[in-house]
Image: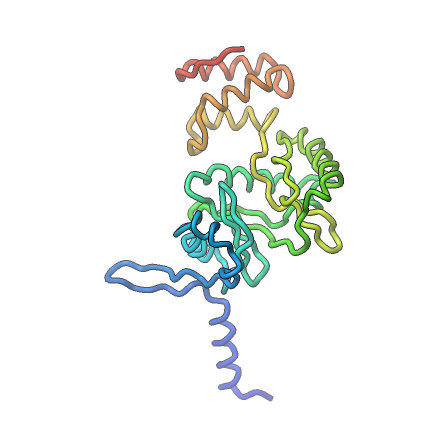
Amino acid sequence: MKTRAQLDREIREALARGKPARKKRRGHATKLDAPRITNRDEISSRTLAVLGDELDDAAVRAARAGAVGDLEYQGAGMSGIVLCDKQGTAFKVARRGGEGTVAEEAEWLQKAAQIPGVRDHVARNTRYDAENRVLLRECVQGTVGTPRHTSKLFDLHKDIRKAMTPYGWLSPEFKEDSYVFSRGRGPVLIDASMALRVGGELVKYAQDMLENRRPPRERLQDVAFAIVQERGRSIPPAVANKLLAKFKARGVEVEF
């Protein structure tokens, strides 16, 4: 039987392993240490040069959003940098200017997780940390899709689009490497950026933008254009006309 002292020590060690990045004090300010990125030496020099200080900033923000221990770099795009922690959580940290795209991606994944036929093929446990501008989801392990998988993945992508449309969303931009072939699950979509709203979801989004209930993620002109595109398709003309009249009252020029 372990002594009380041994048990206390093991508890302290377990707590220490689960602590977020340590904080440093500099005068009155408090700063988080950037967690270690275990595969930094595998990142190309070109990528490191492009990301610059955003990489370490992303690691710090991932820690603030709940990442535990060292991190593994997964990749980066125009909107975000993806890191995984040792507990199997992926953190997509919005890059400068990509906050709206990452927040919208979180909305899409959360909706997709509720739809039969789609939820088995998308990353699970998605939530958005607005304070740190980080999307959290499961870190899916497996083989990344390549052009040789195009036919199979594009068919699945079309099925996802068909299933999501009645719920006010289209599928995200199609890229083979947005999918990971996970053992026991098949292709799993991990990157859901650039998905478009349609129907009732687009109407609600437009109303929120017009009433300033959402942060300004895009120009009112672009939202009005989307309404014009869906007028008579996923949005009844009468509903679209009323919305477009509101955009005109806000000084947005629209033609339909």
